[in-house]
Length: 290
Image (tube, rainbow, N blue to C red; front, side):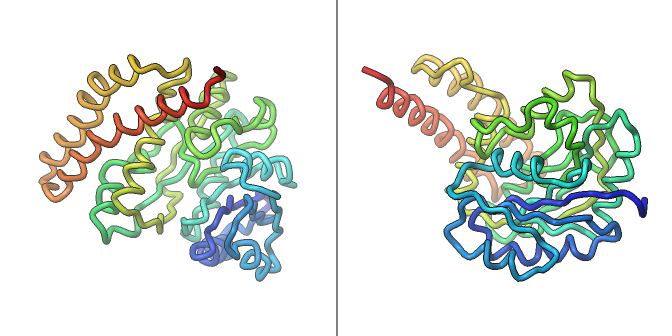
């Protein structure tokens, strides 16, 4: 393991408040990264200046905001090593995180390994709702070939990722991890989820931001409108998806777990998801050629 060389990267967009903790957690890994890249995706804050404070960090800047998928592609194209690990800027990795991920990459059939992300901030109602309904982990047991690997903390083979064309940049900030996973699985690559590779999420949400993020998760994760959006599809999703699944599942889970305080957000979700679908349809109409 001591000879394993890994490039670690952090995609960064207006993350100045989080970046020092993220970088410093990579600097204290038991498996030292061969290089650490910060991909600044057109930040308007001082994220780039903060990255430059660390002599171990190589900063790569986009001249404009191109989205998370583009930042990931830049990291893979720039990485010196074939093993490339990703840690989101609002996460802090435990010291053994990278070593636990990299250990599985000794199997030449494995293209990627994902770790466990625990929610470190659960102060507000929105934070507690995120922890209950938007987990970025698959539980306490090691799994071979989970549903997908979350983008927040993982390791991939650069050669495998580039072979399938990298991340789909048209997806920008959501769903790019699921899409890459599907294409790699179609090439018969294997994957591991190892909860021993642990990181902590330091994000804090408002009611508005959590509802918007959940809608983006849903829209991208299920590829909801890949064939085009119509008013009929918006109504269909409202009745047969958002009501039957998104709303009923969150309510039933919260009642079963006695998370009664989260129920108002469950009802807000039932209103917000169809509203955002309708906005998406309206925007498509306004922007369509006449």
